Every structure is written in C-alpha cells, then in structure tokens.
Length: 131
Image 1 (cartoon, helix red, strand yellow):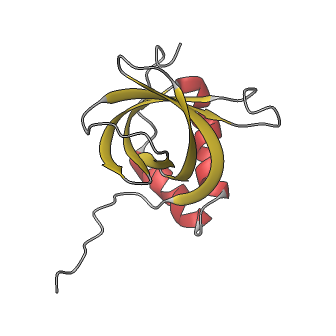
Image 2 (cartoon, rainbow, N blue to C red):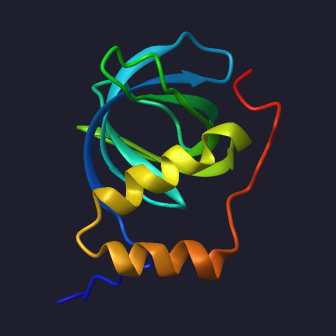
C-alpha cells in the first residue's frame, strides 16, 4: 500500500465563495472556491484546463460579491473531474490583506495560519495583476 504524503507547504482553509477564473487566451467563467491557502486554491468546476496554463482569478467577496474582489494570478497545476487546483504566482497588492483575512478567519487553526503568513514574509505582489 502506497502512503500518501502531503506535500503542501501551507495549511488550507475551507471557504465557500465565488470567483471568476480567466485562463490565458480564454474566456472568464465562474467557479466555486472550495479551499484556499497562501500558495493557491482548489475550485469546483466542470471545465477542464490543462496543467501549466496561466490564469487570473478574481475572488468575489462582500454582500454584492463584486465590491471586494481579490485579484490573483496563478498556474493550473491539476485538473480533476470536479475541479481545478491553482498555484498562486502573485496577488494584487491592494487585495493581500483581504486574502490573508479570508484564510485566517476560515482556518481550522487560525494561529497556525497566522504563523505561516509571518514566516513566509508576505505575498508575491504584482501591482499590475488583474488590472
């Protein structure tokens, strides 16, 4: 029996928010964010994207969902029957605090999530991301 090794660098937070995923060269489409961490996220969708494709993701928060979008860029690292795993390459600088808060508030271990942010030294910022 093969033992599964969890290679994740950061703990995941279970969330239930909507996002708009725009693959490079493709049309945007809505997805449901299932979990998120400092390093990336998993989203539910029936769309299939090839690993390696770059994408932009707008995570929609707030009562009207579009009032507090969190802009990120990333790469598709896995596509399975029920969703897509995305590794972040950058986070829009003005959205970093909201994303950190979303992760910590929804974490099973908020203290551990806060330590991970502290040790990491911050996000990979790209002021031009998702403009």
